[in-house]
Image (spheres, rainbow, N blue to C red):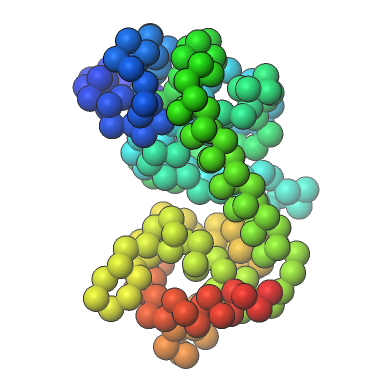
Length: 235
């Protein structure tokens, strides 16, 4: 990561949903504790064991949150998009990060110091509610991931993966939902809890059945969301 020195910081802060509901004076105090960083694809944002001394907010780009398994493979836990933040509960619990955050594409990350987070965010009910709502959302996401990893058919796992990717990267078009995503087949397999070979085979089977079209290594057009939802519901 490289700290930015040529951005309109105040304008960017106004556009960050996490700070919605703060007064002008509170935002001025927050400004004293923020840093802006430019990231490139592959940049490590934080690592397992790092102290949760800063909150990370994605302004542009996307990052993946993952752990390394004993066999050397990655297990992707989440993919975060602009507006998402990482570390709220970790700071509240005076904890450390238990996973790795890595940039999937070029972007901008804002960090907020623990001191300013506690000074303002903890005294603002809107911000606290936002943290709790996001935590609940991630618990439900994690429950779905666990279900996908340890149960069900390959069809169900891949269908569930495509539905999750549609939530993160999907754009509705006249032909269906277009996925343009920055992750590889290997990363898709990690997210689905299966192998790269299974992902490749199932995607081609789904294409032959008319559920999707494969437009490239990182573009998929979903024609039939309903059949994917049925398949995902089977596992």
